[in-house]
Image (tube, rainbow, N blue to C red):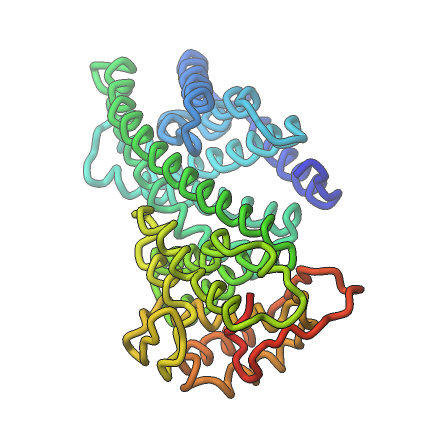
Length: 435
């Protein structure tokens, strides 16, 4: 974002001052400047290559090798040129560069201090394995902790993420990739101190670059998936102005239910996709029916009830969606068999569809539509509980109730509040029947 809050700017300034403090003792320690210059140039080069080829993340092995080889102030200095010179797409660019440089300088300094305090320097010089792994592991943990603590702080201040969520899972998600980089950095440091010298140490970077490239391809593929989904959802939103934002909210509610049910992260993500894409079949429904304010005729209702099959036809060839495709097809089925398109009963309905059905009905009731105003969240939950067992899976309804009790819900209005609602002939007691 371009408008960085003042408190976030103050936070960045404080971290930058702390980072400069880490560099102050440079004049009082014995610094092998040739090694500092070589490692700093190598790190800056890696960052430029990463930016040119749109790789993801920072190349930490060089920084951690510096932490294992150099005194703490000198190791911290290795990160400075590369971080300040690395390309930044978002504005304000200078502030973001300063933030990244300060964060890395602080992290490398702490890692080097921990490594040297535990006798890691002697272990690296003597190639003392497996003992060398102990101080190196502690340094990697310290490095990861500093980065995640600082990242959580900037999320809370700049993005206004609640403090409980800012740090949740951040350390554990970062630890595995940084640990791999730390192992590569340790190998670089040991080879650097060996008779073969820095040239041998550079060879460690070759397999790391390959793995980095593979990781980047994965993220590119993931970004392509997200772009595909965004394009489909935007098309639906443009077609039906009254349900703009509905898809994203159903995706969010589906994700909340899935997490409450204890599903793993991969399935939670698939359920989010299912919620987002559940109404994509409305692209095949005439716009006049979606925007009609008056009652629907039986023929018009049958046309609208074809949208799950249209949606399934549209997404069935997208392999990464997995079970989300079944949710797109069956999210209007009912436990008592009176739903559509196939009248499935109870357990015949895929679990993903049962999740999305509850999320869809909940958001439909708590959002303003062309034919009625939004209901309060409490009233919507009461309706879901009343229909549990006949229309909705009771376990999904309970999961949503628990999730909302824990996290709350802030429904967005998707139509003009000043426009008076007009009856459309909606079926009473069937919140799942909507356009």
